[in-house]
Length: 194
Length: 180
Image (tube, rainbow over all chains, first blue to last red; front, top):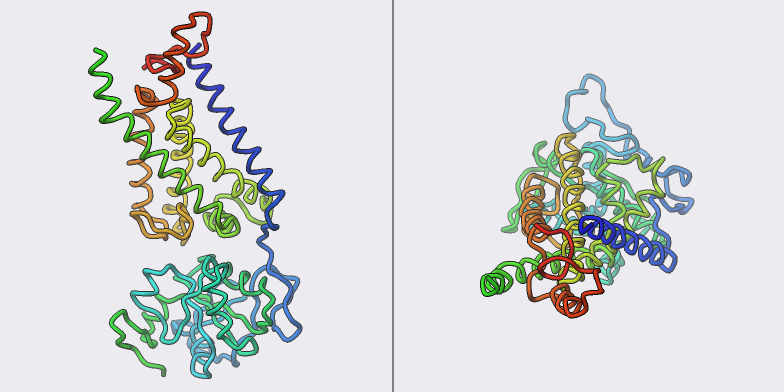
């Protein structure tokens, strides 16, 4: 009898929470995983939900498949070599990892702008300092982490005119392991740009 | 006997109730502030295919924080303590299953357990979050077993109903059902 009472109350709590959640969804702005439509200049096909950036430069992969710089990440992302070319050309880099990881080490000059921060005024102010017509490269830990995609979608949803937003397919760990430039917490920079 | 119950209520049940309820209220509040991020975090766990179950993930992102909030508030108030502790325990078990799925499948996922706050553990999913959930599960199980104690609305309502024997809505020592 008492167990039944408790079980009924458990169901009541879950039911009430579900009703509140449904009500919340009706007054909240739509939540979606789709990538927003992009300005015409953007190399990404607006119909695709995942990233499909064009390569930064023609990539010479002949006989260098094992070179970490040429390892391809998830479909539609750029390699370390392509990211490095953009880095050397002065592209803006955005770090989509968590604060502690960014503070510990990051690509020199990279902005700390994960999706959550972009949705704050502080993030918007910081994003506004990036010229929207220049390439932006987003990276996270690496592999198939969603943080980069979430950040890219958050940037594009703002409609601030960004036309070239790319995702580094591997990630910061691979960038660091490849001996590329890394800025540490003490301000020192290790690695070099070949 | 009654003095022992009071001591237990003061030293164990009340702080555990308020602590566990507070943690869940905080977790719910941080998630409600950024539902988009929470939905993306659920998607990142890769438990469900986002392409075929997008609506389910989005509904979970709206619903879960509210269930957490209601259970948390009820725990703090000491109302329906056993039921709310059971809901909390159920959620923790589900969270742990999802965390283990992420860990064993080597999915690089962001926990978003407390929105963009890092409470005890880093944001990236790892064993720390599993241990944290086990630690939170212990007081939840204790509260299911012992109830909310003397310092809660359950006890208050129980005393009133005891004065009205016709009211059988509350049966436990502290005014709530399911005796330990």
